[in-house]
Length: 267
Ligand SMILES: Nc1ncnc2c1ncn2[C@@H]1O[C@H](COP(=O)(O)OP(=O)(O)OP(=O)(O)O)[C@@H](O)[C@H]1O
Image (cartoon, rainbow, N blue to C red; front, side, top):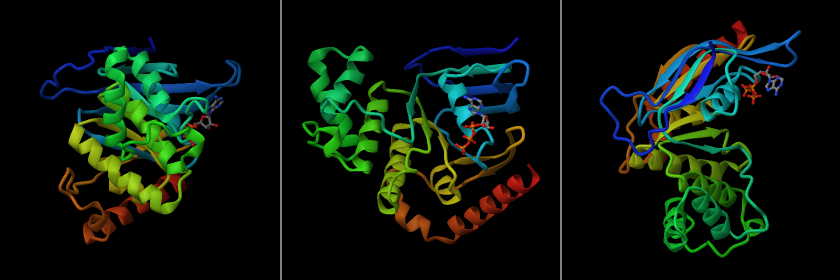
């Protein structure tokens, strides 16, 4: 029987050996029942608390589908999906309310997640500080750059205090410098807050920089074909910019590029 469930233990203490996300033998079909497309087939994976798992692979291999399964937006045709803690989602496009200010967008998210009105202004400022936009609450969203908008989208996702953050190519539409800055900030933010992240990208560089583990997918049908562990240092004190220029980063990136090329060729 296919199952998708959220056990919903928001804020629960993380038990030793605990798992945040479990997919077991999961397949997803799209299209009409008579002629379905198998988007992903027989995928099993587990994500443990605090892990930063990155999904890479060629277009159409099912990266977004896996993320949508974890978010609860899709149901599997076979297999089970279990998500044990609270999820927040950041998409490629920020999708902010243009008629609200930055603070208004965040206050709306805080209200939806039950934060009392009196606490919202302070929490909004705290969130803006976390994403590098202190004092920007009064701005209109159309006054912001693409990078600033994506920062607000990340703050909005954090408003719900998710323990698991799902990010679908969140930096793809940004210029190179803004993208690098946000990569560094999200990497540090995740490590400092202990947030579990599942992140989709096409970029081997981004995958190695951000991930503690990278899952390489192939298409036709979508499946996980290889896993690359990334044993680079993480945390508040790490100079991420320096890490990019270091030899271990270059060799991991080369290993991942080789794995994604092989996955694409063998699909
Ligand atoms: N709503 C849908 N209806 C029909 N087929 C779909 C739908 N969404 C996705 N698919 C198909 O499922 C497969 C996996 O799509 P998915 O978007 O998950 O891949 P992806 O790896 O995220 O691709 P990309 O890197 O291009 O964003 C593809 O073959 C795609 O055409």
